[in-house]
Image 1 (cartoon, rainbow, N blue to C red):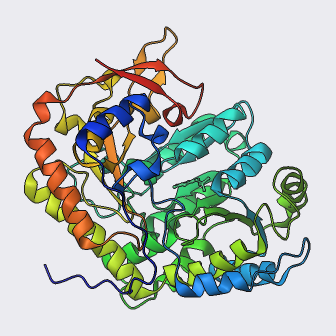
Image 2 (image 1 turned 180 degrees about the vertical axis):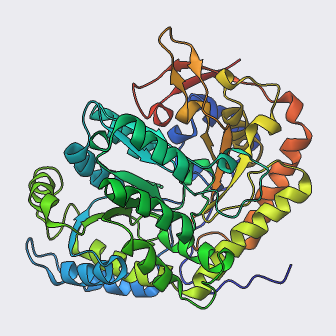
Length: 456
Ligand SMILES: *Cc1c(COP(=O)(O)O)cnc(C)c1O
């Protein structure tokens, strides 16, 4: 593999505090075996999430100084609107403090009992915000998306035949919107193809159902299209994203991902019918429509960050950095979800620890052991995060048991990743000694954030 050149220099550094194995054992116990309860100072390499964890550029920090903190009509708002408008082509744009705030507003307006909202795969906060309204969040990924070893280049695609079947079965009036999550974070961070997005839109148009995008990782999705879909090699990622948005009636985005910002997001719509009601809820829950829960300086950081996230040098490094990490893991035998997506490498916990039953959280066993062994923080995306309880309290497992190693943007270097590979290889060699967990307490939704666990 050719040397992968980091297209940035390091200008500010943040020291990492080293810990011992004995310290980490006791810290994890105090955290009730839930890594969300650890202090970040006690983590060596933090791959918990790529959300809000990006290193900002010198230009973003400089832009923040230009932040206009006026309550209404600040120039930072107009800079933000100009960038988001140019990218999405949407005339009505509302800043929000992060992605789930947009979900809250959108599904409050479109959801409700009896409604069904299909998607290629809903993210956990999206699902929770839909279900909170009494609506059903339905995942319709293509069959290949559930085959960990399949090399299908667009596992983020939505099953068009199943979508059509659903609409025919329940009727279009029960489906207020179809949501496309780009990339499909929870199933592996896989991109969707433009051919699939067009096909989905065609079906929806026939029934008058709007298409919305959950566009958190739209730059990574666009770059994967450039690399993998015929006909796009000579288009810029920004142009490819514009084409994706051209098929959508609305979108929301957490700018904590491909906005390269530490906080923020937006909701945007093409049609005027929802605008007044969005504005009312925005003022009630977030803030005046020209700041939407953000400081002026945050709007500046996002506007600048969006441009940087679409730079080819940046995206080339980003996608190949993740692919290289995946290739190193593959060589050690660690089972991963193929092919690696844009923002993370996902370990197939069901194959890594087949001796642990889903109800004893094989992914969480790997996450906890990886922290104790090496101080690396990953996150379980399996029975703990996505599992449900049946009517009699029994465990209903999600289709895949995964551990996500999310890569913060522009934060870690190659040698940090080499360290993680070595740690995982050692863990894999002793995988038979991994033990499962029992859940002692859980919240009614998004339980993984606060769950209390105990080793078996
Ligand atoms: C992060 C994320 C969200 C929610 O955004 P927050 O900023 O964390 O509230 C929604 N959808 C997807 C696909 C995400 O990755």
